[in-house]
Length: 388
Image 1 (cartoon, rainbow, N blue to C red):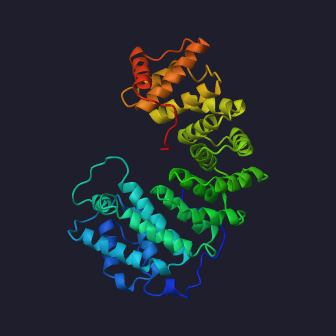
Image 2 (cartoon, rainbow, N blue to C red):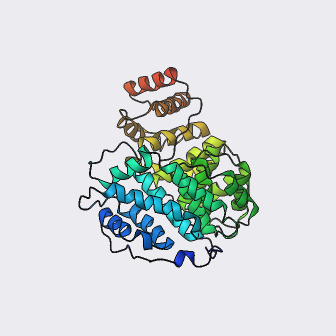
Image 3 (cartoon, rainbow, N blue to C red):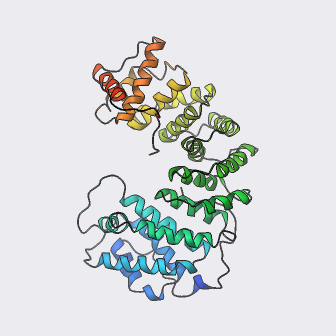
């Protein structure tokens, strides 16, 4: 994600600012320490484009720490400071590239509860961006710079910028959404459209006018053949998460998904089915098309995907004995110890549906007990989930 294909010059009326200074080539760097040392030792002479290239390279090298450097944190602070100071003079492409690189870095180091060694660069960056809350000030600067160039920014840079906001759950600001509402979407390629709606939904920022604009555009396209499964799935998920119903859009998305034989990733399938069930659009042809694919990939499904697929079919009330059989129950049982309370509540609804159907499919007694307890111990009136 994060690489839209819109057209545009990506420039900004600021002369040759981005070309001033030194355009270092960071590609030969093999480790984070090597990368940071090269940037910090040339910091005053770096061009804006080189700064953007640094952040792109950093997100790719995070898992390669390199030799220990006791001054790594201080050097990174200097790079962050210089980036924020110079950001107002960045051109569109440089700003989007910088934002995306920083967002990917933060997303990686803040994921889960993974523990890093004291000298691991990822621990240093987690301390800077997450523990010290540097994320918001940095993205405040990015957003402020972006608002000033909205009339010049190309579709690809704009979608990458908004996608980066979504990665760190930063409010994309109403001004950015309002701007997209006023411009043509013809230069927004599928991934760019997907990035925008996904980011707004992920950040929890309501902008129904923006979603309607993009929904109408996608629904009005002659064909969705250029859209990849992930893009179709993300768009559906975003509308469902935002609570925006768009029947024509879901008809178009579902028709494309049912015809495509490319939906093979269980996450994309689970997200798409959950979205359709959430907005009440239950196309039997779509659910039937996905069932054999899911059945052949049960060992690849996470506990999140298993519960949400089961929940979606129960909400749609579309029985599939070829899917919900002993194999599916076995897959659920193998995840009994890791289900969350919300997932157990979803499974309870599915189990009640199976009993109503008199299918004879039963969860193990221990898992049934956990499902009942989950539903009675807490209120799960909104049985949805966060995209993984």
